[in-house]
Image (cartoon, rainbow, N blue to C red; front, side, top):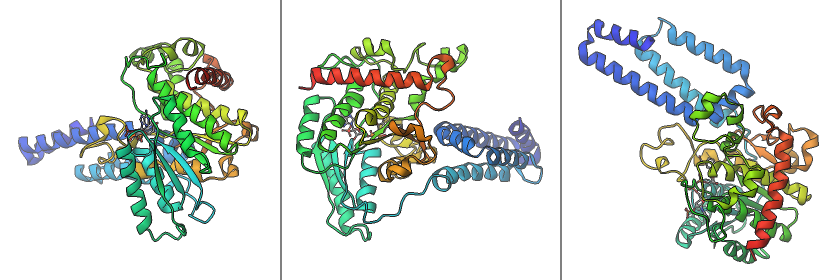
Length: 431
Ligand SMILES: NC(=O)c1ccc[n+]([C@@H]2O[C@H](COP(=O)([O-])OP(=O)(O)OC[C@H]3O[C@@H](n4cnc5c(N)ncnc54)[C@H](OP(=O)(O)O)[C@@H]3O)[C@@H](O)[C@H]2O)c1
C-alpha cells in the first residue's frame, strides 16, 4: 500500500511516466529481493527470534516506525530497508554465532575423515581444519580427479600458510570412496587402517530426483548413499577407535517430518508431501527403503542422519556424535546455487566459508563444550548442532509433538528401530 502511495506521489511529483516506472521497478525488485532473503535466511531468522525475542520485537517495531516515518524520503526508506536486511546478515553470520576456538597445539595433528570432501561443505571444512587448525584431513571422494584437485588446493594453502597452528607438515590425503557401493566403503575403511582417525565427518549427499530406480541392493539409492553407507563406515571405523567423534551433516529439512502433521489441513495439502511425508516410521522401515525415490527421499535421508547420531553413543558409549542442522549454504548441491546470480552472491544464503561454522564447532568442541546448556540427562545420546553453533537435544523443538504422536520419545524409539534395520541391511549386503 505504502509503495502504491509512493508510486502515485512520484508521478505527481513531476517524475512523469518514466519516474513512475522506475519507482515501480524499484518496488518490485525490493519485494523480490526481500522475499528471497527471508526464504533462504529463515533458519537463522527463526533462531534469532527464539534466542532474542524482546530485542527482535523491539527492532521490528523500530523498523516499522522508521519505514512509516515522514522524516525519510522514499529513497532513504529503501536504503534503510536494505541496511536492515544486511544488519540481520551481520547479526546471524558474525555477531550471534558462538565464536570458534582459537587454533592451538591441541588440534594440530588430529586426523579427520570427511566424505564428499571435494566440494561445498566438505571441502570448506577440510580447508579450514587443515589451514587454520593444522589438522590432518582425509578427503573421501568418488572422483579421483576432483579429490586430487581438492587436496592440492588445501596442501598448497597449507604450504604457504603462516598460521602458528601449523608447526608440523600437515597434509590433505585424497582417497576414493563411492557411497553408492558398500564394497567401496569397505575398501575405503581398509585404506584408513592404522591412520588413527579421531573424527569422522559423514557429509556426502545429494538431492535425489523423484523416481530414481532401486539400486543393485534393491534399495532406495539416496537412502543407501546418505545413510546406510555412512552407517557402515561409522561402524567399521569405531572398531578401530571406539572413542571416535562422529559428525553427520543433516539439514533443517529433517524437521519437515513433523511439521506437516501439526500444520492445518489446507497447508498440508499445498506441500508436495503426503500424509506421512519425510518420516521414518515402521512403514518406511518395512517397505519404503526398498522402493524408488519419492519427493520425500531427501528429507528421509537427512532425518536418518539425525536418528543415527542419536543412537551412536547408546551402542558405542565411548564415542560422541553430533548431527548438523545446517541451514541454507551456498554450495553445488542444487543447480540454482551456481552462477553469477546465485543466492550466495545475492547475499541471500550463507557462503560455505561461514556456513560450516556449526560443523567446525561439532568437530573442535570438547565433550564438555558440546554438552553446554543441555539437560544433563541427555548425556547418553547424540546431539544436534544448530546454525549458530549451539548444541540442542534432537527432537526437542515444540513441533515434535506428542499430540501428533511424533514426540521426542517416539522419535527415540524409531531411532533404535532404524539402527536395528540398518544393521540388518548392512550385514546382508556389505559382505
Ligand atoms: N547446501 C545446503 O544448503 C545444505 C543444506 C542442508 C544440508 N546439506 C547437506 O550438506 C552435505 C554436503 O552437501 P553440499 O551442500 O556441500 O553439496 P555439494 O557441494 O554438492 O557436495 C556434496 C558432496 O557429496 C559428494 N557425493 C555425492 N554422492 C556421493 C557418493 N555416492 N559417494 C561419494 N561422494 C558423494 C559429492 O561428490 P561429487 O562432486 O562427485 O558429486 C560432493 O563432494 C549434504 O549431505 C547435504 O545434504 C546441504
